[in-house]
Image 1 (tube, helix red, strand yellow):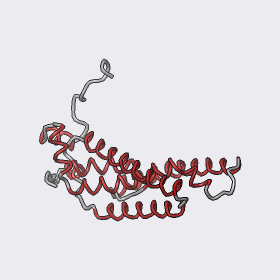
Image 2 (cartoon, rainbow, N blue to C red; image 1 turned 45 degrees about the vertical axis):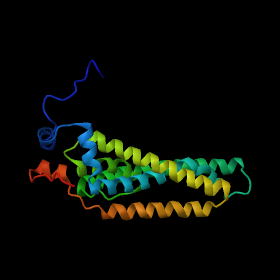
Image 3 (tube, rainbow, N blue to C red; image 1 turned 135 degrees about the vertical axis):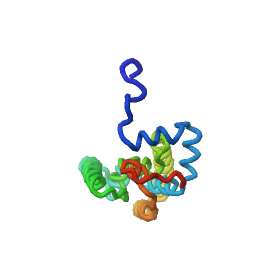
Length: 205
């Protein structure tokens, strides 16, 4: 990477990127300050964190949740738990592919769960443009990891301490519902798309 690749291409890859490089000094502190003061991006952090965190928690605790519905932890029960995990991943792959296709056609960014994982990063770039997209991606990752840890710990408490598997599942549904509602509230202009079309870009939050 150090020897072969240059830091920047000889020309910007798009009109939007060219404008971003001209308008904004790519400084970490300034980008971070701008991102956390952008109300639409804060809402995206919340919705992305809740949806992605719920997915991480379900993936982590799928086995004990599934096996709790069996009287004995048999080999058959473990096999079905593994099959459920595989179906969860496959559904996520299909959902992400479909979400990407719909996004490309409609530019509608309001998706959730695994489809939200790639869409969330793209939406974050649109909301925070012309700021450095690496910062928005990092903040979204942090929000998802923190949310995943908290939700997983709460689920563990309900499942292992109080044997409340149904309550933990209801909690996940509530978290996903809140994340979906917050996603629907976001009304930020697609700033990068506007810059690419030459219709101007808003730099305030």
